[in-house]
Image 1 (cartoon, rainbow, N blue to C red):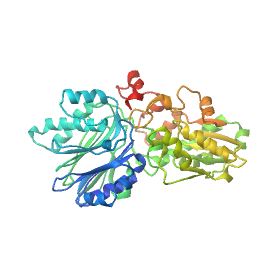
Image 2: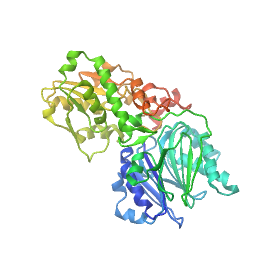
Image 3: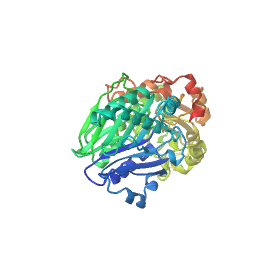
Amino acid sequence: MCGVIGIVSDKDNASLSIYNGLTVLQHRGQDAAGMAVSDSTDRVKLHKDNGLVRDVFQNNQMQKLMGSTYGIGHNRYPTAGCSDSEEAQPFYVNAPCGLSLVHNGNLVNTEKLKQELIMKDLRHVNTTSDSEIILNIYAKALHGKIQKGLSAERILEAVDEVHNRLDGGYAVIIMIVGHGLLAFRDPNGIRPLMYGRKNSKQHMIASESVAHNCLGYNKSLVDLKPGQAIFINLDGEVFKRENRKEARFNPCIFEYVYLARPDSTINSVNVYKSRLNMGTSLAKKIKKTFSYEELEAIDVVIPIPDTSRTSALPLSLELNIKLREGFVKNRYIGRTFIMPGQKIRKKSVRQKLNTINSEFKDKNVLLIDDSIVRGNTSKQIVQMAREAGAKRVYFASASPPIRHPNVYGIDMPYVEELVAYNKTVEEVCTAIGADELIYQDLDDLVSSVQSLNKSIKSFDTSCFSGQYITSGVNKKYLSNLKFNR
């Protein structure tokens, strides 16, 4: 999961708009940030580094990026490669034309592609990032097209070779110096990507609709179709090419559980409404699981901020149990799920959350969270509730047990890290120290999202179901994840 953004404008403030867009998309990656911009001089100005957007782009860096009319930006959340600043995006190659790329997602045939690039295509790969591989594959494909002259049609046609070679989930924006922006989405539509505009001269591509809405690029707002490519030239003309590779639409369902902002709409599904549905269906599961006496004994429903607040509200109404804020979140601590390394995540939980003891003391509490991944956060939260005086601590997850790695751009890299792997619900409950644990059923999770856009027939649910939608994910690949990530 990363955040990507690209802007084409007739104003010379593209860098400022990209900066503002990256701050809105900060929740998608907090490891590194970067930006590449240009103008009529065709000079590329690029800056990237580890850290949050506000830290990477301070006044002196922004001054150097000013005067640009188009460009791309990226928030990094590493799922492959390393955390070195050299692997921050955008990546750049000077031929053909000068190409800069930002990418959200993850490939599953990276090693094969890397060897092909080096041995057959004679291209140099300088990092361990799969984003650099995508850039070089597109550069090679475009080079083969422009022998007959560069045009919007040939820029788009070159994407076909990229789709034919890549296996995985990806949403990509490429700045073609002197020509405009190209964007495309993988043929399964796993990772989100949206187009919007202010007017005929100002256009934006970004990961989530919240960026378009906050910056005013919300006219003609639409998701790129699976496998679709879109090219916006510097005059503001928009050209499209539809998917040439057969695949089903399988967007990542974890976007709705946790990744996306609640004020976003992705794949024509309002994220906030989907989480309300998750809360209602989870409440019905709890009603079936608990006896009348057990439900009556629960004093309060407490969400674990922030993502689970939306689901907790309809759940409390359905169960007729009062909802209270029992945890205060330190807004200056980032999202622990996307922090690199277990040690940092464990240390950050108590820095991130503090209890309001009066909401726990001598009460039976039902804690609601969006998901349980590694179990470290959940275990510490249950312990904090007990230390605050809770008599009994029940725990409910708005998503099913996560028992399998996600290989398409979410940091669930190998099964040994997942608390639910090879465990029953009762064993997970013991592991996190709760008195009772209730998970959402997968069918109910899918229905919570699908009911808002019935044209989506299936989702990528691999981290719950273990069913992977691309051909390159096999036992050998999964067994090597621990060493490849």
